[in-house]
Amino acid sequence: MEKNPFKMLNEEVKEVNRYADINERIKALINSSKILLFMKGNPQQPMCGFSANVCAMLAQMGVEFKSFDILSDEGIRQGVKEYSNWPTYPQLYVNGELIGGNDIITEMYHSGELETLFKK
Image 1 (tube, one colour):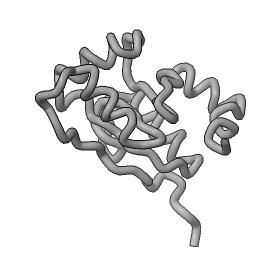
Image 2 (cartoon, one colour; image 1 turned 90 degrees about the vertical axis):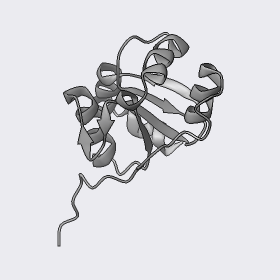
Image 3 (cartoon, rainbow, N blue to C red; image 1 turned 120 degrees about the vertical axis):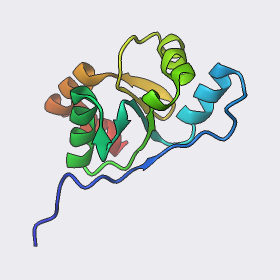
């Protein structure tokens, strides 16, 4: 039987303290997983093509990750843009570091850099 390469291996992150400082909330979300994707929707139901694309690449590689739906919290949605100095979504964080958005992740996927990053 053929393995489904698009099976999602993730879970959605839920915030514990929605009343903390916005930067503390963002740091807590980023540190909640080795790999975190801020996206529109969730991997089972992405709400934009760019989020769907990044989820599909991660799934194709068998990468386990957590996600946060930025549409569920306007404060986080705006705050992450300022925190990362990155204006668009999705945003992929690995080990607490911003890797990039859809364009960068797509380039890294095709060049093999993304696979190398996850093998570390």
